[in-house]
Length: 308
Image 1 (tube, rainbow, N blue to C red):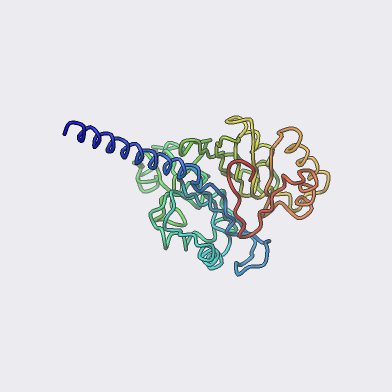
Image 2: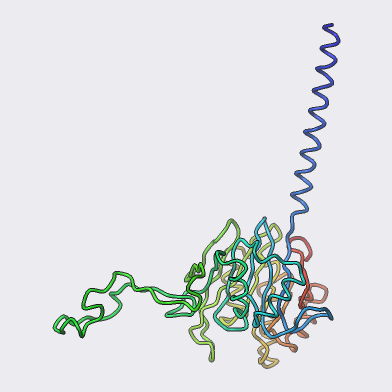
């Protein structure tokens, strides 16, 4: 009887080890197969499909268990249709990033808020901007010699003055400085000093991966070189730059300067340009990067990690 008990004990122990091994293998497989990709939901170029091409930008970023929507395109109906055709459930997002206040990057926001009204939205903090704003009431000079009816708030203003948003019920979190919003996930906040977009604040998304920094940009109004420099302050190895580089009207000399800077100065591993990068810049980047130039037209999904 003692021998039989011992044998049953050995059998049970072996079975437990087998189950532990299967569980460990399952966890390891899940870890290695976790979705890590960027899917282009909105752009004006792409291979033939049922998705609608239009000027604007939107991308779904899936990494480290997070589902991040970066911009919402130009037209709410096209954005909604494209997301549906790609099987993207907009009600299942961890958060949203609006890179800047131009309509071709936030036009689909009404649809997004219809299906996901409580989602957190990171947006640039701008003076009296469309995403809302607040200031301490001490920002204005006061004159106590005036009668109450001639004074703001009868001379007793609130400590903080809050100003309205174009989407008053949205959960905006306004970003003014570089911010880490999740482990290894950063927002780069810069201000444009370029004619036509002077003082425009823009957010870019920087994700730390084992292969280096992945940088997602909307329009690069502050200059893609400045954005890359800011991201390199977090991790000097820039693995991938994807999105709009705002060279659509640039002369060849300016394009070549940017291409040389990305390729030779910052030694960016790969580029996946889209949106406002411009056709001549597509060609120049493709020539410089060869097989490390990644096509990122409408509907494309690019792997994050390893060779995209």
